[in-house]
Image 1: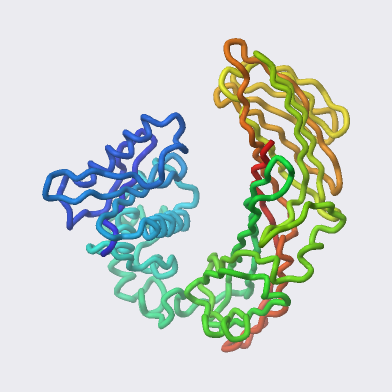
Image 2 (image 1 turned 90 degrees about the vertical axis):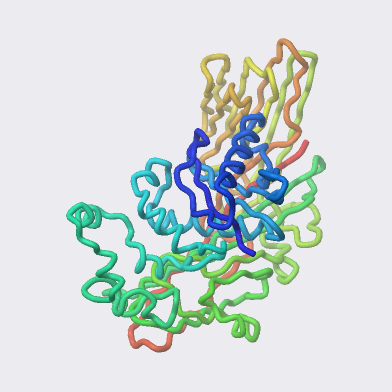
Length: 472
């Protein structure tokens, strides 16, 4: 069994476009639209709605179903499923279809999809068959079948020229031989570039939860190797690493030969054209003997299981009174050679919070006073430390553009709750970036190509992100 179809809603809950639900009753898509809209209207925040919603049957003869849904820009994508279909199957297809739309249109919005309704509908027809099974999901193959929107295409369409027929016939336009002419489904035939280049971006993201004693309850790092290939012909690439043992739970692009990875831990592949994700993985610090000292100069608490050391320490002090509260938060970087960039610390102060007064800086700083407008703002005295309070969401946001190695930063302040006792969230959310750095220290050893005679330029860089919940 496959998924039942796909529905795209705008920010008002109205359908923009949907696939053909050929195996269900006409009212079946409306049941799922109403179920999602009702759940959103009852929820305090859109994020409180369960990602999988139970949908009761339309009649006695019909079986109940479920609706998988995700938010994307100002739209919501719905994927109805029924029977014994795994919801993860629906979410996987939703993410794949969103990636395809981003490949075609760049930034997504309801206006963009409405203006390119014909292209979106063709993509729905090519990526999902009548039985609910995915068909062609490779962007390279889809571009030969469904032309990306352009001014030339629109002019030809208005003039009555059927350019799709010309391309699909394999004459004149498009890749040599038309679509599906290549023996490799993810790569076009006859590609030629003046400069042959391939770039690897290793992006790793830390997800962590720390208890009030500063001990990580969970601290995992998930990474992906984003690749951009601009190479001629059909090169066969062999990518090797100096420390492949740090990679665990790998998921590969279809171009990667699994038997070669199982045998000698190298990536053997013929790359698709353009941007793609070569592999996704989880960093396993227990596989690397040097992982415990990865953050040089750190005084991190003991690391358990596969927990990765967190690159900062947070100290909090809250004093809650009957109708007011004060707080003092200090953040210290544990890194010795890199800076924490775009550091954002968020704290929900709870219902009724007002009259925010804060000092946010490195060392000493300026005083920002709340109480004006929906977004109160204060700027620290040194090095780009600032704070802002959103009175609608009741969230205090503390921002540090660049935290140098081993530096300490502090925010202290107070707020009042005139009608109720203060109830701030007992968790601080911290997000950060580290440029030219990876938690796993994964390094590329060499890249060899066969099948082509040109010299290939290789570019490699790393970047780390973090999202840490620090409880107090």
